[in-house]
Amino acid sequence: MKAFRTFLAVVLCAVLALPLLPAPAHAEGDPWGDVQEDNFLRITSSEKWNEGTLEQLTVTDQIGDGALILADGQTEGTWVSPELTVPAFEYLVASWGADTPAGTWVEIKARAYVDMKDAWSGWLSWGKWGVAFKRSSTDDTEALAKIDTDTFTIRGSSGETSSRIQLMAVLHTEDASVSPTLRNVAATMKNTLAGQAIPVWDPYRDEELTEKVLLDSPCYSQGIRDSAIASSICSPTSMTMMLNARGHDLFPEEIALREYDFHYQGFGNWSYTVAIAGSFGYNAYVHYADYDFLRHELAHGRNVALSVRYSATPNGGNPYLENGAISNTNGHLITIVGYETIDGVDYFYSNDSAGRGDENCAQRLYRADQLDACWSNRVCYVLGDGPELGAGYASPNRTPGELKQAEDQPTGKFRLYVDGEPVELASNFSAKTSALGAGSALLILDGAKLADLPAPTRTTTANSEMQYVSVIGGYVSMGGTLLENNIGKTGIVYIIQNDGTTYEAAVTFDPALLDRLKAEQAAEEAAKAQQPAEAEAAQPAPVVSARTTSSGLISTLLLIAAGVCAAAVVIVVINRKRKK
Image (cartoon, rainbow, N blue to C red; front, side):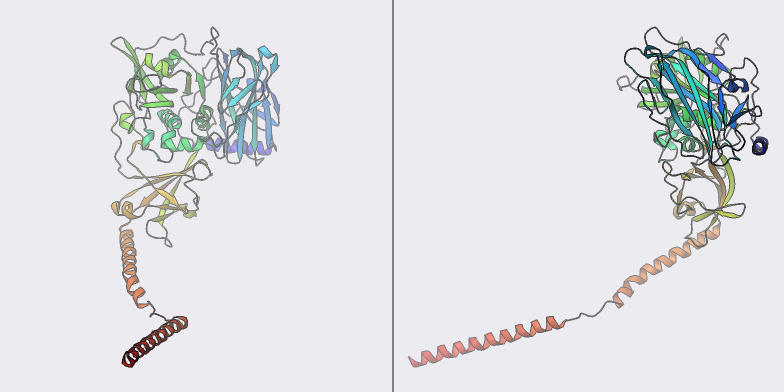
């Protein structure tokens, strides 16, 4: 068990280094514990893990309520749940909470017993998940069921449903001394057939609601983020609002780039969005919810996110949502931060990332009856209050560093240093959705202006005025007018990589750099001015080839001969005239 003890020691050391965020105790009856009720189930405790079949895995009580890790010396292991009885469903979405250090991944699978066919489907996978890994969902399909990115669907057109499932987890590592950790696995189910709706699991069902809730949730516009991905990061932007409301200080790009699905080629995989929250140690899950569930979460101080589609005009092609932040969207995630009844009409407050600028995203009032139609799929992101005990030790991290002008490069090309040693950044850094180690980089100057948000909306670093910068050939590029405009200033460049690392690098735009830049510009101008003179001086004299000379001589002789002939003709004519 030497490797196991080493692993636990690393975990405990990492726990001490975690931010001082609240860690909930999962007592009996706690809504974050084991569940198998209504349309939701979750397995999280040591007791429940041990009810399944374990191969090459072991259960530890040192993390969360209990967690799966690889047994000593193993590089891959499997856990299979018992058969689980559930309400008859058509659709199922899985969620999980895992720590995946570099070189490790976890994979969640499910199979379903289709009642009408009296047969089990095959095992279908949500794909291999890891923060520092090229995570990829699947489009697994077989006769009885299919999985499309994040949704497991019972196939058929005759009302086919399933009332029994099994879950499987696969844990893998490239190094037997480093194990991934799986703390929980969950599933939410939905049935849209007439008369077969499944009740929504709500742990606070019997609690009375307060009349109004308005949380201080942070708010971010996706449209002002990295332009290469801004149009499609509503899901991770919403999750960033949720995580930062729990005390983090993350950028939307830090969530987006670490949950990107390389198979689906997008940021909208519901399971992966909550999995990135799970990598920070949280109990997070997707839930097919209802308004009562939403209001109870809000009343307990937790913002939530909804998957919606809407049009901001009555005839826009999607359900109408008055005051919608974007004119039309076929699929979008919004964060819900409160509710209130005004003049007899129920409203929800939304921080909708589609607004233009952070100020225009915050606290948009959406009518509950209109939002109800827009929220037709009933998908909701749910996030606990704080990290579980011992969890989040392999979460995406920030590494402090410094940027210095590279002596062998033009002015404005900065090299990254960490602990005094140079760090090689990816030469294809802009390939953020195809290559690991690529990503986004942004500059925030000291004293940068923050967005002016309505109270009680909380501001974080991501609300700062910022400039996106390029990383070219391994160097952070901040030359030209950007450098000239910021001489004498200091700031931080955040180099956000899609492999789980963010470099938080201090930079100083030293006045000496301006002298260096002017000297380079002067030398360049002098070189340009000298080029025409040198070119003229080097222009060769016309060269007449032997062939050209011979042609000219022949032409001259022919002209002379023609003249002689003409003269001869004239003489003959004159002589003839004389003879007459």
